[in-house]
Every structure is written in C-alpha cells, then in structure tokens.
Length: 157
Image 1 (spheres, rainbow, N blue to C red):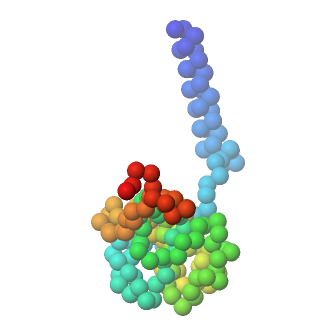
Image 2: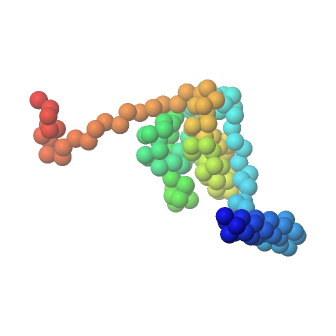
Image 3: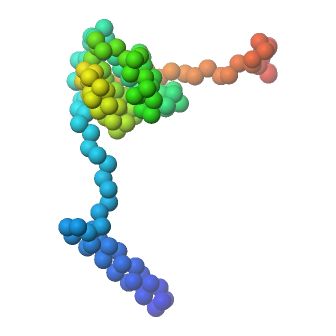
C-alpha cells in the first residue's frame, strides 16, 4: 500500500512538472492543427443554399461507407479529401460549393483547399451535425450483394 502511494505521488509530480513546462513560454508545446478559414454553415444558411440547387454543388469528402451508413445529401459529388486536389477539373466553377463531412472537420479542410484554388465556397457542413440540429438528410438502404453468375441467392426461390 505504501509503495502504491509513493508511485501515485511520483506520477502526480511528473505530470505537474510537465504541465508547468508546457505553460511556460518556450516550453514544450503540443502542436495544434492549423485552424481552418472555412465558414461552418448553420442549418438555416445551408437550407437557404439548398433552395437553389441549380446554383450549388455539394462535395462530400467522406468515404462511401460513411455516406451509406450515416446518410447524406441526395445529390453530391463524392470526392474523398485525399483526392480533392487531383479532382479539381470535375468540379464546376460556375456554382457555389458546399463541402460536407460528418461534423464539418474534414469539410472545412476541403473548403480551404477549394477556396485557395479559386472556387466560390459557401462553407463547410456536417451531415450528422445538420441532422442532429433538425435538418433532413437522405438515408440510403444498401442492397444486399447479388451473386455474380446471375443465380438466385441461397435460400431464395
């Protein structure tokens, strides 16, 4: 028991020293991710943009499995964030761009990339965040896999 108390006291002293060092100028600092310049759209802002789909392009930077399991907007370009810069030619420059991810984190990074390349970017949105705040997203049921040879699945008549 006495050894455990000494061990805990030593651990607390080490943590306290590390915290004090991190708070001092020039001390050890944790590298923070660069802050995005992208505007995170509110539900009313996004709803207003969605009333004119002919002027809008939605780019969803999530993986396809995220879109199918979480849901998303009914019409969008699916370009994962890692592929965005190599896909600029596919994105219409005459439309306002909204970039979507689950909670707008990746979307904000994508919005920054597109804005730096001259696209008219309205902002970033999170599909889950939008839905949780009362917005409606599309949920798509993924059909079961079909046999490649045209036969009926096992158990089907």
